Image (cartoon, rainbow, N blue to C red; front, side, top):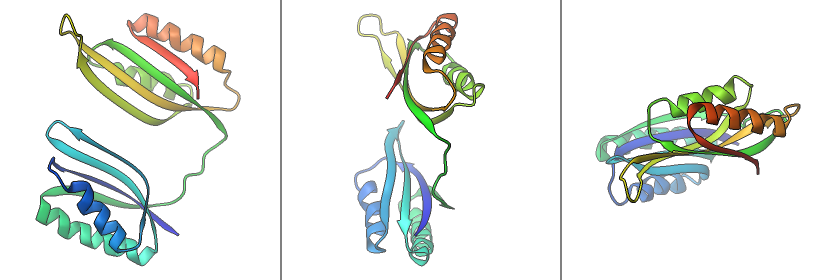
Length: 172
């Protein structure tokens, strides 16, 4: 079974998910994983599709036509199943007054320890009474065997204290 990852972005409008999923379905392909979100005035899609290799090539061709007609950008990339070392998933949450560098700092904390980020979401909202921008970060990390979760949690809490962040790390 062949696999591909597709990324699209275009002006948000009703019917985008329908158009993309119809193209996939028509070719008897399967959407295995996907993330879709409105970001600003754009709608972004990231999906993993699997099925017959010839059907995937045809999907790439059809997406090029659809992208021109519907005015969106897309990237089609053949891929393979991911092989990963044994790890323990952990959920990380960070809340702070918004300022530049939060994502970079948290990413650096984990990458410097050889810990992979599997999933990451951010959102900025405004505090109810003051209107202060509040930054929310949620990620899932894959902690390799051999790293003690209790020690990692303590190091992460110290990092958050030093950076003025409210952060938690918990096993899933």
